[in-house]
Length: 282
Image 1 (tube, rainbow, N blue to C red):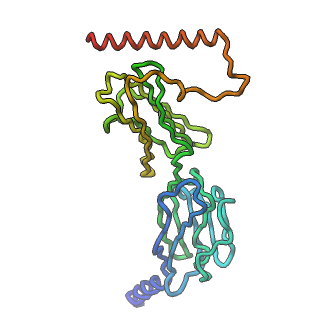
Image 2 (image 1 turned 180 degrees about the vertical axis):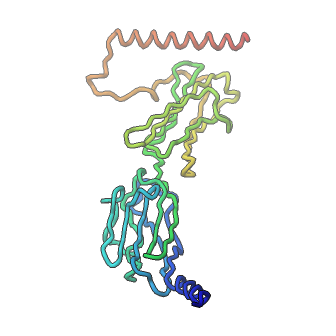
Image 3 (image 1 turned 135 degrees about the vertical axis):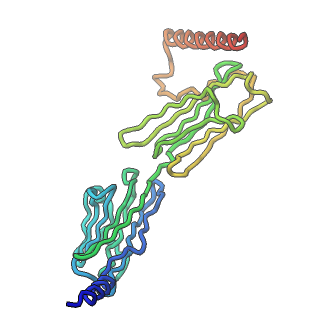
């Protein structure tokens, strides 16, 4: 038996029926609220398509099967993508290419992850993986100043409904404020709310006014936004930024509440004055 002839025949035959993914299109970044996205797995099956062609999509590993198409049957939507895909979407009129792609409707942040396309026949297989991040720049982003005392201002920056994990920084002359405190919370849907506050003393402002910048960033999404506020030291206290609009029956506070609020503010002021005098003494 001439084995060399059989070997050459196998090589030529494998090229005729080889499976090859030519291009995998998965959007890297998708903003929350986008109407739809298309994940496309463009492949070739050689000159003579092999029997048993199957196209599968996996989410975050080989155990997360979310889509399967066995021509000429209709595609199946499984697990995470069930109810989230347009079942009538066709990317091509060719019988062996028609349902290779997935059209996801209103993708949410929970669909962020790695998507793998696997194209296989009875004798060949190819696969490729791409990642997609569905990010949320937030529903609200505010930067305010609250002045309770003549010589002290509180800068408060708040952003809500963010994904993925955000970074919120207050800058003075391009540098982060050292005394800023950040509080971050995550709700049951995995969305973040972040608040950063900082106390600024008039002695720290060396010009007639100073512009402070609050920078919101989502590092994984390559997203950045900012808000600014201008502070003029020496102005009289104002509580307009911190007053909440309440229902009419809640407007009047009892005398105990007023005394408690006054007592708390007095203690805060006394402690702050002592800390400033201690810093100057040192």
